[in-house]
Picture 1 (cartoon, helix red, strand yellow):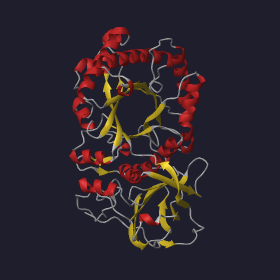
Picture 2: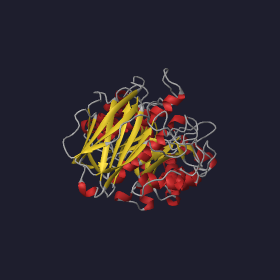
Picture 3: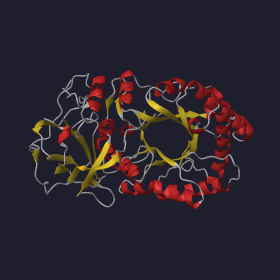
Length: 496
């Protein structure tokens, strides 16, 4: 196992829990890169990224705070449990299917051959709360539902289902009324009739459970999505909200709003407007603002691979693409962005973990570990880029410091299929506080790209490796050279 300094708390915790237990060959260092240089004078003028530790911007966004379980996945092992716990999730989203519960019982088997209750018990141990996508509300000849999926009998069935699971799994906090009704071809009118049954059932369940105020089980729409563009999602949202506003039931409820984001591969910055557009739609109907959850997102939907790429390129690009989208979603005020998925049994590029027994991460999983390093420092500091397009393509960064853990800078270069293969840049980190570094600055650089920390392209790379490591005398300003592939991620960590 590689040596990890004691102050690299987030990553060392994860590695000590099993990521480095396999023997593997060293990962290739980035060749011919100059050493880090520091000064107490002015900033370097040719920096692509400038980090100003003197300009604090409040709490840093938490890229890794929420996650999704796929029912196509096998049950993760104990090393994966520890890996997930180290990410300190606020919420994990999982699934329950009403049709299947009615016909096979509460502990029915997911397609990954895992019992639903077994899965809920597992994911209850890795997050503060659970969000349930309560799906399959349309009956069929082989899978009927009480009341043929409507009315009082159906509401009672939903109520009893929720009461059963909530009593057994108290961390269940959020319910979605289905998933992607727009994608499934339901009109907003048809879907709203189903939604009314859900809110009546949730109200009844909360009353019977004695839950009120912040302790209530919260309800949202089944996440709306789009396979074309974000405007189509907003159009369907407006139709749904018009029906909700016209509903005269005084007990109607929409506790939070849900959506999934798979479009805008060449314009991730558009997602900075996602929550403002939803809030505007609510305001236009005379409704109060809601929390907005993005409960799935990705560079693209389904099994799609760009025509110019092979699977390996998509695996590598997934990490910076997810960062680019999540960054702008959070910049625009989205309350929680759920990473999709811990392990997807059918679509490998969506999987954070390549191995559920040993918890070996894919590039996407390493990106979440890097995000945890940013979160651990707590306070965001200003980052600016000279190589970022109006659409959010190019080189960007998120930086933080504090909590006695120095400074961390998360860098991503995302350009979809139109990219320059390699770019050598300088990251200028200014106004590094002396009190945080009484002696040396211990600097480490990590990469996620086609050569580094990429188990798909290099199966022996089962543990996190550094590209470079240096100990420097303290200086107020530090210039850090990086060599970035066209779609890649880097992490700079400065520890005392």
